[in-house]
Length: 461
Image (cartoon, rainbow, N blue to C red; front, side):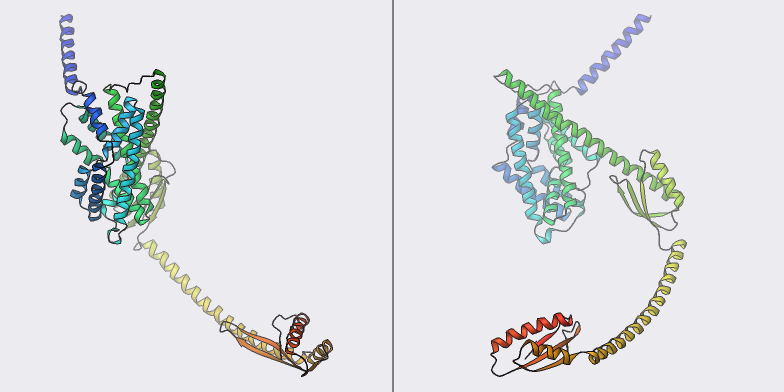
């Protein structure tokens, strides 16, 4: 009886195993040679492919500028962007270093052509408005990684079949959306909005890395034949180089996936707690911003106030969810009672300060008046005690050709400030030449400035 049961279970297990193999086995319908040829044929970015790429970028840029999803989808269907990316993944999978170089070269041409075309389009002022379609391409998250990886897997599996499914290839071109991020990056360059450029180019990089990684993984899983090399030593070196490159791509891909996963997880948990706060406290919460890098959450509250206890509780819950030292910025509603009280306090303080300032201003005016009067008195005193006769005799002693010396205070203004300038007028004998007078006046002026310690002294004749 036991043997009969065991035999029955074995039959069921074999049937299930056979069913699963028939359902999920992709190796039986694989055409290695045709797949490699098809991918190699689509790598080149020259001739017709280059022009198709340029025109499809223009179509996509127009669609993004008008927020027309249908136009953007149409552009993605006609663009040849996928070719060099598949080429990079395939070349890594089959150890073809020459094909890898060709794929990288054409990938570079593809990126430059795309950025240049979109840059020129968005350089036109009438096309520089921000639209929802453009903004949507600047915030990649973990779902974009899943789309790129799953799309890349679907694409290479579809391409490897003997009977290729054009619907699958077209669907992957739409889902992975390589073109819109490149157009958005061009928009960021044209308008100098670097956050747009960084976010969009990051999204394009995610799609590129994971589509290439998916192609590499499937080609190895399906055991695509390695490129044949006559020199076994060269094959070994190339194999090592390719393996290192594959590792360089795959390791950052895993790290990138983890980082985007953590960012999405942080945003999701923060949204959950904010929803809970909104439901339990009956608050209207607006303008929510989450910054994963800074671990900061900010939002505005209308209606009930968020107390310090609520914030402490919020931090504690985020800590329990794995995000310690989370920061919160809460903008309270101006209609709250405590806020009104604070505003009243500020208003009262402002009025008191205004009264104090008026009083101080009057005191300053009185002081200025007093200073002005004292200054006039000092000037009068200076005039009285100024030793004019003594200075005039000293000037005469400097040169016997001087007949007369006069002195006065000249008041001048440049409409910014007013100065009082001491002026000495010297009358020379008629036989003294003009050149001598000029030189002697300059010497006497320098002497007077030193003697009177006043650089404003002037000498004229």
